[in-house]
Amino acid sequence: MPGARSRRRIEANYWPGFVDALSSLLLVIIFLLSLFMLTQFFLSQELQGRDTALSRLNSQIAELTDLLQLERSNSDDLTSQIANLTATLATAQSENAELTGQLSGIGAGLTGRDETIAGLQSELADAQDLSDEANAQITLLNQQLAALRTQIGALENALEASESRDTESRTQIADLGRRLNLALAQRVQDLSRYRSDFFGRLRQILEGRADVRVVGDRFVFQSEVLFDPGQADIQPGGTPDLDALAAAILQLETEIPPDINWVLRIDGHTDRRPISNARFPSNWELSAARAISVAQYLVTKGVSPNRLVAAGFGEFTPLDPADTDEAYRRNRRIEFKLTEG
Image (cartoon, rainbow, N blue to C red; front, side, top):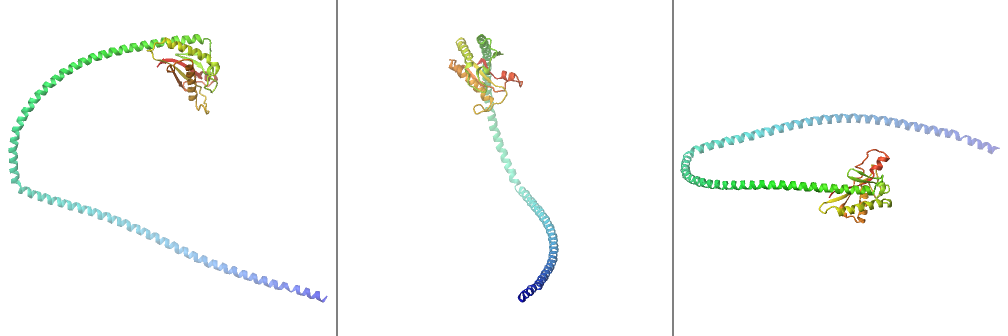
């Protein structure tokens, strides 16, 4: 019991010491904060004074800069004035030297006047001698002029004869041109007659086909007769019509005289709907490939290659400009035209 009472007394004695330590620590902290605030105050006052001094220095520097700029401007003006005065002085010196030279020349002219007169008299004597020689040369030139006139007369006669021959040549050329025009007209008329016979024969062969027709001076096959959509390989269903066409062309080759130059032009056309694939980037390539396929097939049937021309027109020459399925169908076509080579 006495030991327990002593332990409680010892434990109760710690608290006052702890309170004293906290009080001391609090006083130290308050002292440090006060010291820090005083330091901050003095530092802010010092910085404010420095800012004021710096502003004053900047203002003085600006004033000095303006003064320096003004001095430079004055210096440039003085330099310009000095240059102008220097140029004026040089001009005055040059004029002075020129006047001095003129005065010297006048004095020399007066001194050499007698010598000049003697030289002129000598030149006059020489001129009289040259006058005699000039009269002799004039006489010789008159003789040469008469000879030239005679030659000119001969040339005029030759020119008149040449103009006469030229008139005759022009008459002959005009006559030849008239004959050539008549011959060409006859060839065109003959070719037109053979074209009519050729188209008439094709009409008989392909009579009753709604997808094959005559448009003007051209024989028109719808593309569906010969090709699948978007393709340039001739389908088997279109070969009979091309066989009949080849037979008509072969017969035509035997009938047209060799001196008439003719060809069968094969034109490929498409509708306006675009196409783009690895084989045909555009309708132009598709139409040209179809025309070439037809030409190659006709060659395999015996038609002379030099009588065939393949051309691709793409979608640029439609028969029907409407945007309908019927218009598209009409514009997809292969045209055959017999024309001059």
